[in-house]
Image (cartoon, rainbow, N blue to C red; front, side):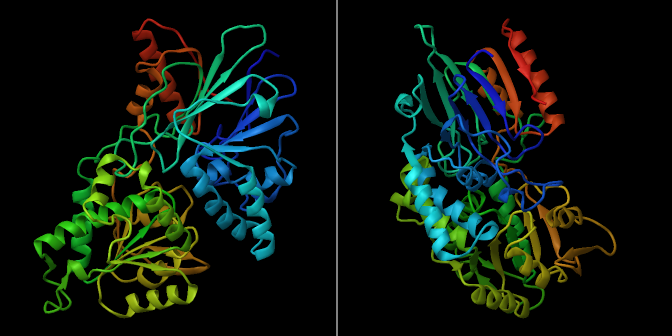
Length: 482
């Protein structure tokens, strides 16, 4: 076997479970991500099982970002005896313990002593790296390898990883680049990614390898229109959203809508159920019902130095994009039940953001049980709904004629609430952005390996990459791992 070489332990057959092993020699390797596989056909408790690959050569773990499909197998890795460093960006170092604590409580144990012991170990292993700076792993590996993290624009702290592997004998370094998840162009909080300057081998995500995103320019106006309509009906807007990334984007854009409405003195007129009961936008409650999302949102606020210039400008103007006065955070389960019952029994308009993003669990399910049967309410989808999830079923009811039901926790509920899908909120780069990343100014010299995507998008992207390189009169091998 020649080195460096790659093994893939996830992220090859679907969108989840990213885990890639870079072998530097016979006895030394590093892992890039250690994620949980999710979706259809995956046993929910599989994260509790042992790591299915040999870890004795693994000397370092590098995390691109802290979504569970990139970090969810860390408990299993630690259970297998791994005690090496966990490298990640400085924002990810703050966010990783929050995400792993929540996942550990749900999937492993909620015992406080055990959780504290686990988190103490995680924090002890984390090594935070600044963006854009090379870091030598020689002391950790006993082999020549340097890494650099660059902004990926996916969620706060997300990065792509450049690895320079230095062979013995003075030969030029081999540069292997791992894209992680690359962000789209429309993120209102994050700084944009810059493609790498060079790569010999590129491991590239392909989530939207067959699709160009639309609606980025108008998504704020369409979000405002959806909220306007629902509130004029006297209903609640239910937004299922994952705690990291999408929730903070939504809060940022809702604050912008509320700020403009407040300046104009607008109210929600013409409530068809009670025309005399117009509610001022300044009084509209925005309810964040997720303890994890609240903690992550606080971390986003504390890490505002990593926001983009426009978002930081709002702070300098005295605005609080993620902690505005109308935002109500719900922590305890008792308070959650009170809010659900209150919104169900009154006709007070509200916006509710609750996890999880595909309606397959979490607090959003109780809101759905209480409100799906009432046509005043709207369920607003701003993210992908995987096949087989309740979110996919509710989303499919959009525009449906006749009687539609859904099973939630073993009970059938009629869907009378309106289902709306708002395009333009994808956190992943589309086909054009992936091509610009991999075949713009960058010229990969040896191989592009497509991961983190369904078979169809991978094949389409592979063909597009080959055509781009042919147009540049360059040849690169594009490979899709089995």
